[in-house]
Image (cartoon, rainbow, N blue to C red):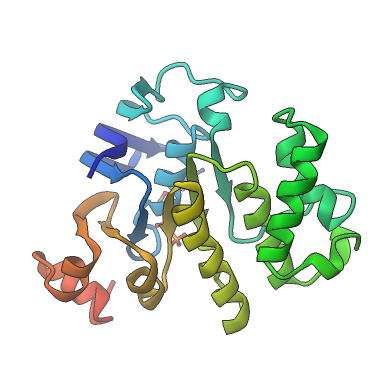
Length: 244
Ligand SMILES: Nc1ncnc2c1ncn2[C@@H]1O[C@H](COP(=O)(O)OP(=O)(O)OP(=O)(O)O)[C@@H](O)[C@H]1O
């Protein structure tokens, strides 16, 4: 696997308490990587560091040959090539169409390109019929799909998803999963998915990373992690037997 991210000796603490301590981690390019682990394991903190939203205390994080820990600013093209979707996405003002078009507008895409790509993705998420509805009036499931569409429409190199289907009904979950597969297959996006849903991780991921107490316990090929984990703790966690 050729890595999209390469992490070495990465440590992050809050108020003197270490919450992330990763010796080494490679994340596969143009693949879906699931990050699993109990609450508080450090999964969201890791996503925020990958995205450059948060800075690690020490360590290196190589993305596209550049160290992201040192000196990658907000408007940097490297950060602009990534997108992140949170559990409860915020809709911007304007219509559903405006919300999705926003990502392309700030990247100065030509108007006809914006139209074509937004309409294509609206079709894909099954929300073409509400394109002109005010984004503030839509349901939670629709908002989550729109947030993912907004993140995907500019064909990011990296898509970071923090529990994108938590609290959604099965039909919406299916739609979101379809989009994730589309991003990987059609856009060649590297997707990093934090999920508490083991079935989802198993269905979608090519690679899985199991985190516990800020450490990587085990990572590797999805099939192997789920059928033949090397570590007892991984086994206990994925089978629901871990007490923590
Ligand atoms: N801004 C912050 N200030 C202080 N502590 C924080 C901060 N952000 C995270 N933490 C702590 O870091 C640890 C890891 O949190 P994180 O949100 O990364 O875990 P997680 O694995 O994503 O959990 P969950 O599955 O519940 O979302 C937790 O103990 C949390 O309380």
